[in-house]
Image 1: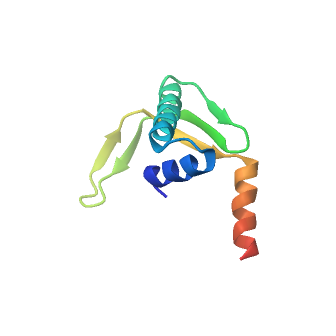
Image 2: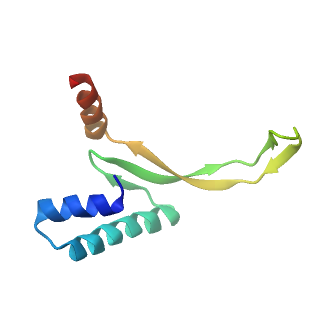
Length: 96
């Protein structure tokens, strides 16, 4: 499913227009991204949590040349799945 398909489904289930739904979905996603970028944790109970984690500086290797490379520290977004979401996915595949 992509963003357009999500918007179509939410619009149909909510009775909102696709334009209103697209605006709502876009605002929600932008808000999550902005909050995580500022260092906040966003928790949607049952769905999961979004947060930024620190990666320390480290050394790696170029797989083609074997040359040692310095990889600077960075922050990466992470997602931890909630229990309801995890259970729903497990049950879906167990029932098939």
